[in-house]
Image (cartoon, rainbow, N blue to C red; front, side, top):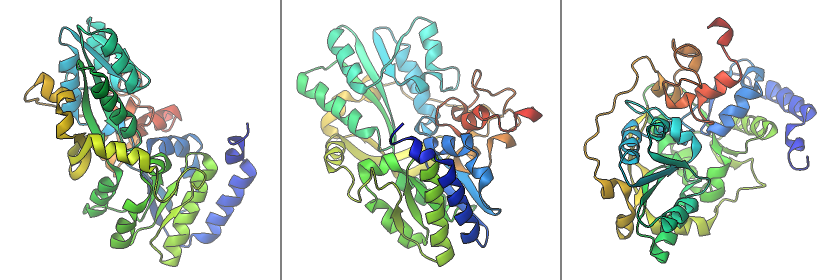
Length: 365
């Protein structure tokens, strides 16, 4: 298939791996901050083919996984209310809260629906004026423009029974938090190509300069990742710390300025708590004051939520990259895709799901 098979060419992959082996002369730790990249790396066994000492650390690149437990609990509480139609992408329905998930609310009779775009939620609200329709707006910068457009569309067309439960997170502050952590071992980053397609990479340049850490904007196919890893290792070996763009076919330095404008119009930067990581200043988006009427958290006033993670789940360590799924005693036993304890086993971008789907470590369980 044109524009796909060429990025999975095994001959080119072997050449990139051979060049990596001649380039790397010492141990290096690189982190990908994208769940889609994690799944490609694990599914294709890229991390197991790298030269000895070159190690991939799987970061908090799954937006479903880093959505705070308290926010999931609020979503469950809102979805359970009579007269509410709660909409979300499919992954969010199975993310465990303290006492259940959104799929459980649906099973008990709640009107919980999967949508494929936030504009579907606006349409449902318009068609059901006697209902309150809520869209669970989660994700990195990638999904923020579409969610912003949904709020703008509802405002312009007078759909006042639509609201959004917003839990957007931003990648650059998370990278900074990881680098500031006392146990940080990461020496270079692969930046998510889809995030940078929206935002560009200017936000990464001060990080690279301040921390002397290479950052390579990378795509999602096997050859994208191998080339991105090679570019990062070259920088490390040469003592450089720059932002480079491997994903030139989709990303420009300035990003998509039209998308950025709509995000700035609808959202404001705010502090955000990341599930498993903790509070990170200025790492999220919240609705701007002029769109406060569309804020589900305010509209429904759920109040104080006391959240509690499953004690045996080490999702926080997984998301920070300090441990891997096979370090977890519940992995493949008490925690599996059909009965997940933590979000990384639920989402199609979660590290635990990536390991489980690839059969990593299951032979010993």
